[in-house]
Image 1 (cartoon, protein in one colour):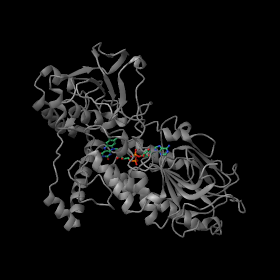
Image 2 (cartoon, protein in one colour; image 1 turned 180 degrees about the vertical axis):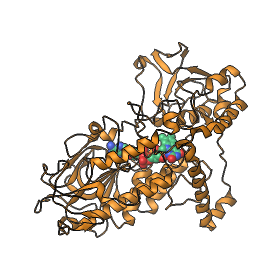
Image 3 (tube, rainbow, N blue to C red; image 1 turned 90 degrees about the vertical axis):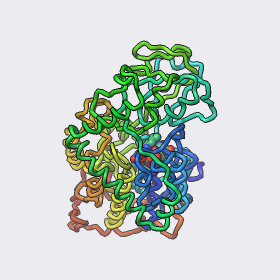
Image 4 (cartoon, rainbow, N blue to C red; image 1 turned 135 degrees about the vertical axis):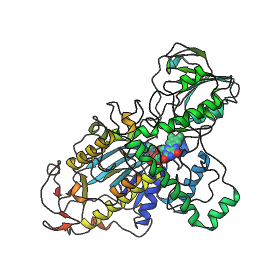
Length: 549
Ligand SMILES: Cc1cc2nc3c(=O)[nH]c(=O)nc-3n(C[C@H](O)[C@H](O)[C@H](O)COP(=O)(O)OP(=O)(O)OC[C@H]3O[C@@H](n4cnc5c(N)ncnc54)[C@H](O)[C@@H]3O)c2cc1C
């Protein structure tokens, strides 16, 4: 029997990237210590552990791409590299005392809602748990996507994805095929071009690329940030404010982005002198429709004699010959896929089984949707960080994560106030209303009108990934949980919850809710929600009592 079998905890966080670690800090700050962070890998960092390809760095300035509660005066560059961001997350883990909570090498295989006990049964590679609340922080760009290329299995050389870089494989003097021209590829190309004998870049769609205003942050500047912490906050505030002002152009007035297109074209023209190549590298869609990329070294690398850009993407592999959609062939030793991630089909969704016995993936066959980016109907006490429509085109995802952590904290407070064995299940109507508003706003955005297909869109062409507003608007929308948007489920009184232990608690905070009296009597009001004994959304069928608004 596995070590953690039957262990019951209040909150199970899945994933130890920015989201999961942020959740852990927030839980501790709320006085909650009865939680674990389940991480499939052997260390923290998420994206910033897994993506170690040459040139990997953030494309939002570090002083904004970091936690507001853990400002870091020591950022060495305005856009810091992967190793510094990973070190920052290790540092946050230590400073906030998170390690005792983290279960490494614990891949979540399945999470099943128990309607009688109102809790999640969680199977992991290191044992089984149950938890009152699950916070899924498995990341939007966590599981690499490699296209199914005919003949790939006949390739005798090395093949890897940018997010699983093989550092044991020396690229010096090799003929390399780089597949894709997204955010990772444009960082890899200038980093490997000087090493390799030949680089063949398979471009399906050219990206818009603006200059990257990266620079080293000198010792004096760092000393000022250290001595005067308000300067770090001020810097962050300015970086944030500028990006908030840009949002209108993306969401309401894409026409205004013409000026940015001219900047991008100038960035290209400075390095690419061949008009034919320039034409092939010029996108035919509005800037911003796909993620705007930042690089001052990508185009200079493409102009080098050992680089060839081929159009149409990689369509076939015949032994060591790679064949592009336009028929171009090249002999290569290595194929690197910079082809992105499972974003609109997040793998964790296949492992979560909700109230109706359906997986989250089955519930989302028509597209992902969740109330305020967090709660899907039929999945009580299950919250997704960076869930549907919480992504950003131009600013830091940490802002969105922190907003969702406010929501999580209030969610847990609400459960406490309600008392007893209780769960909140997002009402379908509330999810629909939220999603309808999001999709209505989406209609005018550059992501939907800019004339491109991008990873923001799902298989049905719906944008289920990006937030069509400012981060400030999202912050306000997630400040509090509105109980009217949730069905409140209660376990029938006297339901036994034996066979559980509270071993995850690292402080003296026994799970009092297992013994607490149900203080929410019918007719009472809990922050605007009137308590009734009606049952919907399968609650009655499951023998639970709903307390509704
Ligand atoms: C190369 C790259 C550059 C980026 N640059 C930026 C940037 O500049 N600015 C920006 O805002 N965003 C950027 N992003 C987006 C980035 O994904 C988010 O900013 C952020 O790091 C997401 O954090 P997360 O914790 O939600 O997910 P992740 O960092 O992906 O962490 C998820 C964790 O969950 C774990 N996990 C997944 N499934 C399971 C399971 N079944 N069981 C247990 N554990 C599991 C994973 O191992 C991982 O550790 C970038 C992404 C990439 C890939």
